[in-house]
Picture 1 (cartoon, one colour):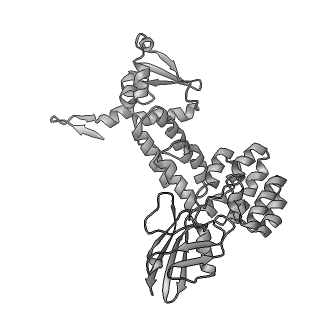
Picture 2 (picture 1 turned 90 degrees about the vertical axis):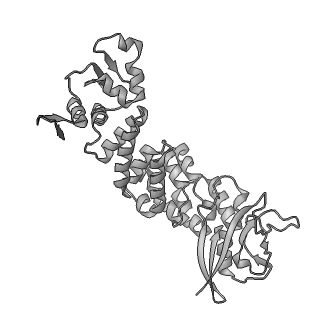
Picture 3 (picture 1 turned 90 degrees about the horizontal axis):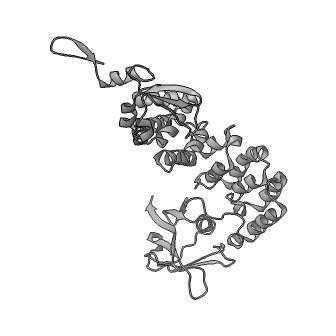
Length: 359
């Protein structure tokens, strides 16, 4: 873009002026060396865009030199990526692809240039697909920022499409462990295990496997699936298999510490009872028990479900219409498993919400 003065003379605007200087030796007063390649640059531009660059440029040794040559060792990157990044420093309006955006993003974080971080992050969000979300997610998961939260939610919302990706076996154990511990709402634990089998085939290191296995909820699986599928896969040790099978058979999930038994997400279900739609949200074991035996009582409800001990659940429901109350569990002095409260007790947790809607 150009501007015209009162005499009709045209001159480039500020953005065009910066753009003309990028990767140019014209008026260059510093050379950056990355991956063995020289990149001409301008101190004032670098310092204006980045506090990190400003600190480098105002170092006494650098200031004492005319046209200093500075080798940038950290962070380690390829010359082609640094070239793209340096172009962004002068002009953020460049063509991006996923690989280029990830490389520039990493450098933008290091050199603390928020505008470039935002440009790359917005591009990656718009480019998200089930096929590339694992690659992008692994690249950004160490940044506790909005971009990682976006891709964590994207993977959580599309577990079947993402986990069947041919790229899954390439993921590191650290990253996959984070994924396996996500609160998947619509993914059966057995399907999750099946999706992981190609990764286990590609990673035979026992320590790497254990990083991932501890987040698979084996105790929640049916004993038949454990014996027919899990045992035959040989990914568990004999001791781990015995622990998982015992927990699944006895329903004593919390009686072992080998595997996580934290519910992945609140369970939601609709049940038609006595001309009402009952919306149940809470611990899936409680809700599943209700679906099997929906017998509401005015003040007391007992279901044959281990939660988490080998005793039936016994709940006390104050008030007349307990379907309109939130159910909080807390230890009960009489020896039953929990008491129910309208308000959360000090040592209790919300385990379910019962709502009635006319239909």
